[in-house]
Length: 181
Image (cartoon, rainbow, N blue to C red; front, side, top):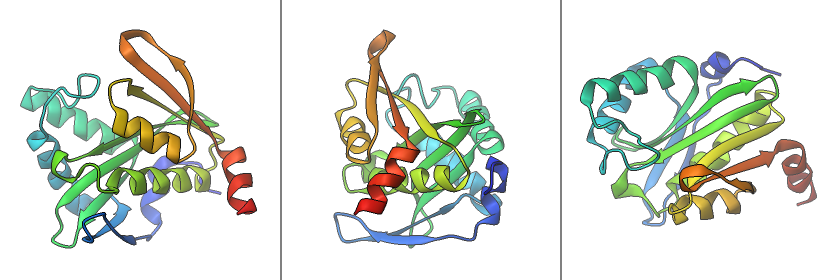
């Protein structure tokens, strides 16, 4: 079992899906060839500062933030057949048994299944990496994301300050549900 997020790149996985518009897209690990593309995706993201102050409005701060995710997380992307990044998910180690999940989908590609598949893929990767639980924070007003996370098996654990919801997914319970059916 892999327990190091940086080792995600050693997995040569790629899964292709159809979105709700019947357009194919691939989910795969982010590699060096697409680092600049991910930075450009967040620089072009609208509206800026839209989820918990992210992505940063300032261009230099945004580039630094994306590079920080690349350096410290296990990153996967949703990629069109034309190599356009439609979405991004990252897992960050919180403790030996717990990781944090971050998911973002470009505004033009929201509400068509990209976030769901990124979330499901992240759950599978978290399991492979040996984590027991996945934690995330999502704004209460982000109804789409809340729906996706609940549909994918996350439980609401608290409504925090500044209108944020904390959610968690217990991977052991998730594995049992998947085995049943």
